Length: 97
Image (cartoon, rainbow, N blue to C red; front, top):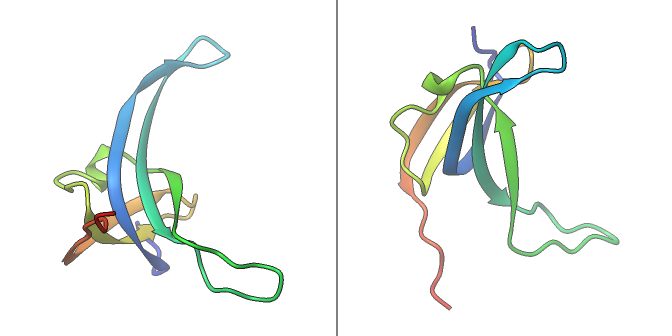
């Protein structure tokens, strides 16, 4: 179940699969990759551009159907994993330069 905390990001990709844990068990994973603005300037901190994040997801259905560049609102579960992604309807385009 998703908590009410939501944040807005730009979706850029995802990865899911399995890996061998230290105890020899196969473990599944689901990650999504997002970017967001660097934040607000304050004394001693002058950000510019975007930051990227790798976010753990509850499972691959959290990002199913998303297209790179979509602005999304993320909702997190009690373990701080992305549980639900809701597109805002906006598509991000990098400025040409």
